[in-house]
Length: 429
Image (cartoon, rainbow, N blue to C red; front, top):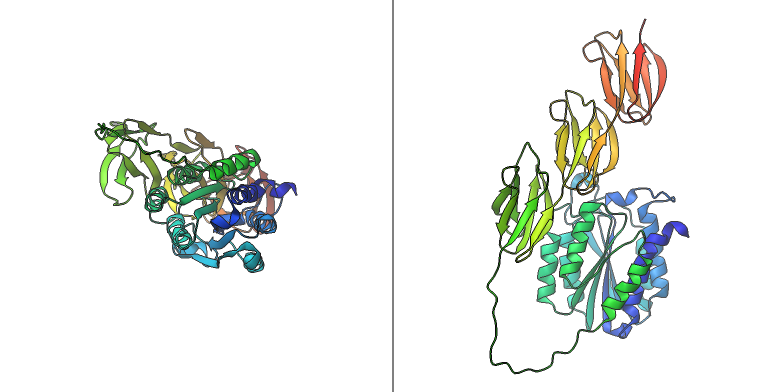
């Protein structure tokens, strides 16, 4: 029961939404994330997807029967390596929940998490789905990650909300990192919705229900003899601690056109109000809103590797394994979008490294030093059978993530249990 408490907030949120103003007057498009990161284990046991499936079941059991509901899933049809940005399926179309409950449960049982997170594409489809429905139209997006495809989900959500005055998009982050939370919050903010964290949002879920049930006040007719029109004001975009080795291109979210750059020499730019993307090497920090007369501040993080190797360590996006940069002896720090990463050490990986806004995350790997190795080298193998690297007379030092390894010395398997920052010296005689 305890391990599902966080994600059950999803159910409470949507249940509260449907309990006000007559369930028959509200249509809910529920979107479930089944991207590869949903296979991650929870500290309390099971995977994120296991908890999500349990939450869907509980939600259906308690939802008022007249509520019209559809069920869409994304990321479940293609493995991550295919980078399929169209991977979504309307599993069950709109019907009163008492009519489609069994179909939704059956579809949920067979869902497998494996693919990408095409949020922009999915919310556009969900908005089109619910646009055919009567009454208040609600989209509830459950995601454990950020957009991994083209497009800016926040800019898309704003356009969708502008096109449909009855559309509301609520977002729920399930064990999300900083970048994903930032993006999901933006989607909800511009689409008249509310964001909540699934890991501890029981009270926030109640507030979500109050906000969603509140009806906008009716506009009273008025007679005015004069009006004031404010001149459009630009806003500002500022970056703290920009990467010293490269500038950050600023592009319009919709067109992709470069409009400015940020660097040590110019960390603040003036821009028209709108949505922008900022480049961190090959990766974009998306859904950055610049408001009139205000300054939007970006606070990136930094990954640093102590005792980095000369050949370097690739820094990968944790969910997609796309390389975002590299650190080495000559450049052992990398400025990154606040998110979650994997850092490679030869064939070994240091996984799920979360870097928060403004944080300098310092990795202190274990170091294996072999004295007396020949030019052929000795193999160091990780517990899962991965070759971490070779140690030889030419390269006698090897940094690796903490963990259990086996050093092959002429057929003799020498076990090594290495802790963070440990220096293990081995002398061959």
